[in-house]
Length: 103
Image (cartoon, rainbow, N blue to C red; front, side):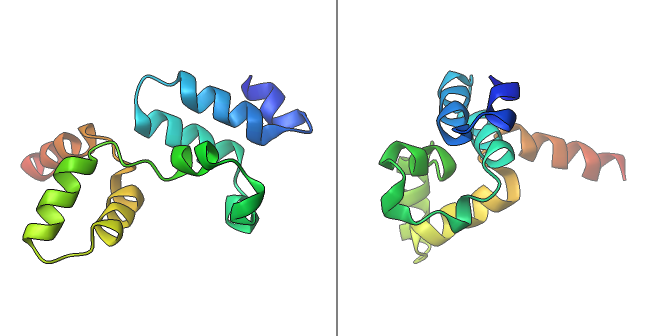
C-alpha cells in the first residue's frame, strides 16, 4: 500500500487505509503525514471528515480537555502542540527522560 500511495493517483485514500490499519494513532498520523505531505493545501470541504481525523487525532481527548481546562488553556491549542511535539506518541516522554538521565 505504501508503494501505491506514492505512485497511484489516489494517495489520500491509500494513506487513510494505512492509517486505519496502524496499531496506534501516532503511527497512523505518521502514515498520513508522510504519504500526503501536501495536506495543508487541500481545501477542508474536499476531503472526508475521517481524513482530517486521521491527520489531527485526539487519542487522549478526555485527559487533554480536562487538563487544559484546569489550566485555563484552549484544548485545541494544547492538542496542536502535542501533535507537533510528539505526534501523540506516549513513548516520546520516556525517550526524552532517558536522554535527560544520560546527560
